[in-house]
Image (tube, rainbow, N blue to C red; front, side):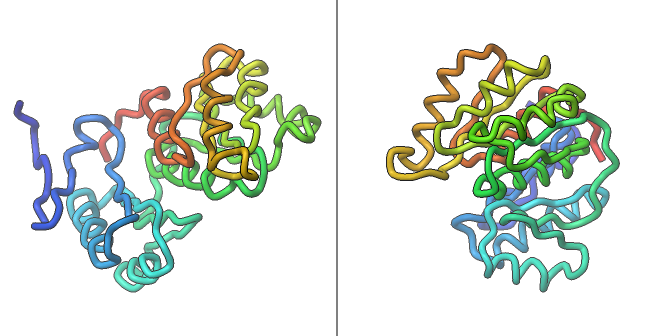
Length: 228
């Protein structure tokens, strides 16, 4: 199969998929876990060189990786909850997307989803700390949630929040289980099973702690297509 333009950039140790925006409309991202800081910097540089007008994103960056990225790219870098974004974020072309998280312990995963969505030209709006243990907090935000074209819901422990949200809004709901919780949460397995067994229709579920995957699912749902 032939693709127009450069399909990937061979760095020797990796083949960076610089052709993804042309094929799918969504940005390539660097998964930093398991890579050296130098490898992450090299991959981000390749993405920036191939698409100067796009923001380049690396997820799951540790402190050493963040330090290396900041040293390499300077003031161009935004760091948020283990995500390094290099370059200016694009103007929103889709949305709004509501990113809802149950508790503040779930915020890192929710922030990952938010930043990745923003990098893909989605108008993402965070609604934090509205878990089912204090349902009145969520009910105060129902009007805002009903304005969203898609909703990402991030929750750990019992994982009940996506079912509640999906019963209140008409938009597609992407549920993200987190590894937050005591022993019987089994590192996110309990909320994952709760979400998979949701009695509210229209709930799709991504992997545990996968804020990135949730944002990319939302991009597909919202029809993000533009190549910048």
